Image (cartoon, rainbow, N blue to C red; front, top):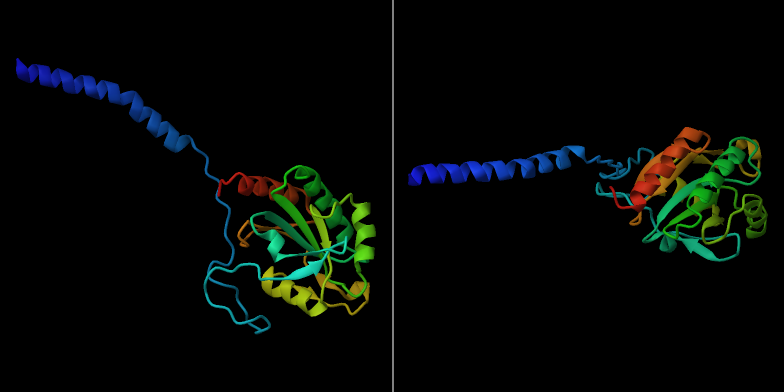
Length: 222
């Protein structure tokens, strides 16, 4: 008799456990995980030895400080704790820059009211792109300093930052607009300075993906 009661009790426990197990199963398999890559976890290749020697640990954006369209210093310090979307351009660019800036306008509109997301557009022609020139360009694209900063700085530091920090190809045109070479990439950087994505700034679908993945970073679903 006692054995029957024990058996009945075990059956009851199993019955009660079934909905719990089903819930746990569905929860585990019903959750969509979207993992963003972390670039350069083992350092950056440096085949031409043009970048400072680094080890084989996680690559982070190095320190830098440039001047924005309002004449204020903006750089790595302002990236800390925020998601930053970065591109390299120049205001007299005759080719891809206008398209890139129009696409970046869409990014700016998407995150205009989100204080944890900011944009840096860094000039690769700092000899021409003074803060005054950048201010005129920023106004044409409805950019507000502190949210979308157009930056200019020392030329050597700019090119080193592009190649070694953000890891994109960049060549100086020495003042000739058609001779400048730079990437069309928008670069997504997380709040601790790791690169999380590259996207073509001339491709609308790629920019849509950038905005989606920036939102994922913003809400901590890494």
